[in-house]
Length: 310
Length: 322
Ligand SMILES: Cc1cc2nc3c(=O)[nH]c(=O)nc-3n(C[C@H](O)[C@H](O)[C@H](O)COP(=O)(O)OP(=O)(O)OC[C@H]3O[C@@H](n4cnc5c(N)ncnc54)[C@H](O)[C@@H]3O)c2cc1C
Ligand SMILES: Cc1cc2nc3c(=O)[nH]c(=O)nc-3n(C[C@H](O)[C@H](O)[C@H](O)COP(=O)(O)O)c2cc1C
Ligand code: FES
Image (cartoon, rainbow over all chains, first blue to last red; front, top):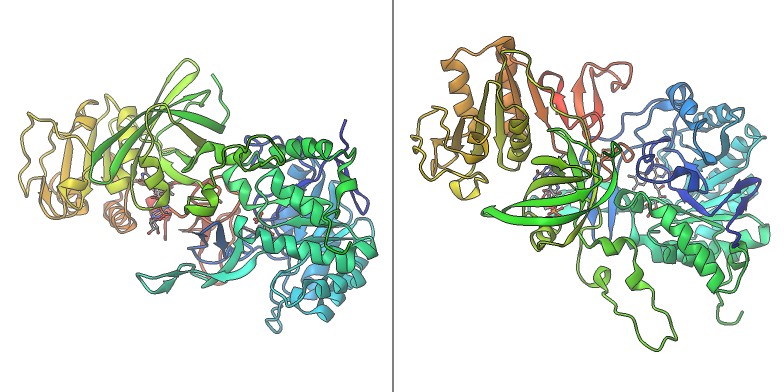
């Protein structure tokens, strides 16, 4: 029997497959299409303090091997999340991670604090790829600001591990990773989407109403692998902070690559739109891969890529 | 009979050209649940083998190199699924036969065209809500334009024996995806007389008015013009009729306006770019009036977004702000 279980700073997953925030709704949306009980963990759509309608359409466009999205954090807001979604989440057959976004320190702190007492919430993931309303600067791209945010948030979440989802739109992701850990992050998740743009050459207009959007899907996988590998080797391994790798995972082969690069678990996003059962298949494939590698536990393979000079 | 939606593999029974760029794809799907007009499916417009990626697994060293089709690296293929309205469906025991009519506009539909009898297609569905049927004695007016015609065909099949009339439009005769019966009277260029000249509707006892923008067949002008003339000539107002429509957005807006001006209830099947098709990605939003408890208005606005995939695709014409 292969042991696929994962420990993410106190959050125990039966296997390393998670969903990506924003690609799987709030709870049972995929219930008819995948076996939710076989998920390592479920990650909700980003929740903000206030309900948000999101950006005008067109909000998505497909590009080669990927897609751009500019959803604009459309979500039900904290109050309705607590009233309508938490009762659903309580019935979910797998561990729950609530993704929280905000536009000020207070936004984050208030929303995260509300999650602390909820029993079914196993962990909170901070989406720090949002601009601060005060100055328009993104929380997740400035190490000082990120450290402070994580520090503030950590104080109101004493009961649960805190995941920080790193933005890839930075010079060196190891620097923001270090800042997040110094702030008190228990788990790092990476990567969020890459800022990108697509143009309709006939009408000479951006294809997204928002002009820019976040690139996700198989197109970003090699960059995400590099970032996971870099964060693992430069910071996370030494600090003992586990990584959840994401960005273009479609198959167990993709997941295995992330594990070798240093991820303890993987999250599947865009691929869910194509095949909602992908996490279940990936889980199965990983089991076989671990045994073919001659290992007993998946966790023994984390970060074991052989680099030149190792 | 399975009642749950899910992921299915369809086997192609036929993929028939209907007119320029339009094809009717008929698939047998084991275990596919019952469906209704208005619903749609998400088709994987590439090989279902892509989802398992067995072909990518190269086992070295192995005596024989497995066959590799490096589809993803060479050809641009449709990554996401593509939504298509159901144009019809029947069930026989455990097996459903479903139809979609697709127009070739890009990589995904171009892949669908290559399908031959016996080929497999990945299907996710059925998705979305349905049209509500007319009440007793209400005239059902079906208005379809271009690739909005397929859901009207499905609806027509559900309304056999009711008072129904169809208005269909295309830019030109070549692009009219309907079968004109050989022995039928040719409609005049300014005539809005409903005729039993379109096989798909006549088969259900439903007369049709066809318009083409260039007058190459039937009424010369937009389908909304023939509809307007008809509504005015027969003084159709209020609850005596119900209008169902699907097609290009400009057309649907105009149809909804015509209906609203006459207090005729109108059900509009909208189209939006979709990724998931089941309410997870929030990509398919459309503006509607009158925010209720389940949706937030923008600050200072009296509208909110709804999802075309789960709240729709069928919306009441009067609530849509597009
Ligand atoms: C609920 C719903 C039902 C639909 N039913 C049908 C149907 O019955 N028959 C049919 O032929 N088509 C239907 N469509 C449209 C169909 O989904 C698109 O034509 C298809 O996605 C195009 O895929 P592609 O890869 O061939 O084109 P792409 O390469 O993706 O795009 C080619 C061109 O088509 C445009 N396009 C792409 N997606 C859409 C869309 N969703 N709506 C309008 N234009 C689009 C693009 O802007 C581009 O100009 C429906 C769409 C929705 C949302
Ligand atoms: C439609 C869509 C919506 C998303 N919404 C969110 C979100 O609300 N919060 C968040 O942290 N990430 C969001 N993401 C980013 C994903 O969680 C993930 O980090 C990214 O898509 C990379 O993974 P993938 O390539 O497997 O999709 C969204 C992605 C997509 C495609
Ligand atoms: S298509 Fe994803 S929410 Fe409608």
